[in-house]
Length: 225
Length: 178
Image (cartoon, chains in turn cyan, yellow):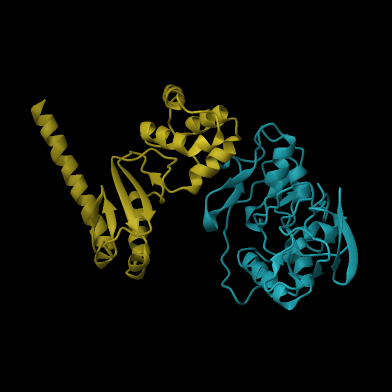
């Protein structure tokens, strides 16, 4: 396969032709904020709107997960226009995310905290009115709990649930603000159908799906499935 | 909103399943047929019970959560059986400004159900709509396809009282004729 060489933040890197900018960057230890990326998934979810980067010669910032790296491309991940878009996207996410870090098992290993720091965004948004979903927590599974209030709808768990099972248990339901990751008819996740593979927990960036027992960060494997 | 079908007997469930199987005839097993199938099944059953959704998922060989996802996405599909009377509370811009939410609260309180649900006696089903196009009459509620204007909470009581009287008259006539 042909390879392309490009520059990201001044660093010269080579990537296989067809690789998306986000993947090329992450594989070369250049971090770009992201919540929904999945390494093994060919088509990006493009759900979180956080991976904006600037490309030299282009007016508008682009999402790094959807744009293929091309030969001679010059990418800037720290451009102010790109970060401003990412911050707005991030603050919109946080407007419906309960911020109680001190009492959250994800504290210290949370992707949201990491991203806030990286892009200079705020965990507690003042620009937008906070609107919480106040959904019940499902702790029916023996291995993990599911708190839909912390979910950012990235879709990683939904995808991974479909990779290991004949018929998937997790999926999206409802629309707009009520959109939620759930099971058929909103049944408890711990009912007999879950195979307890806990793959969904390992890919959850916000610990909306979190192992019981409370060990901090246990199991999180990021975008590498 | 969770799927609830309290008090549904095994017989009724089997019947829903049978009806669904009948409706599925003639449809290919491609998943792009999902929405036409859902429309046809709802046309027959009046709503999409759990059994119908699992039956459809199996037929198209897709996860049942995906059927549930589509059903909950579109306002057109319902998870609960329709009532004898339908109540559609308008929350469009004009109705919103004229206190549509207060009207909705009144309906919720009187019928003791949330939007998208049916009363346990299956007399009323209630839902919200975005706009019905007669904004001068705001706040509007469409009752059995008839738009009612200026529906303040007292009007809600009035509409319900009219239905109650209608029922009483009917009951009386029935008892007299028998």
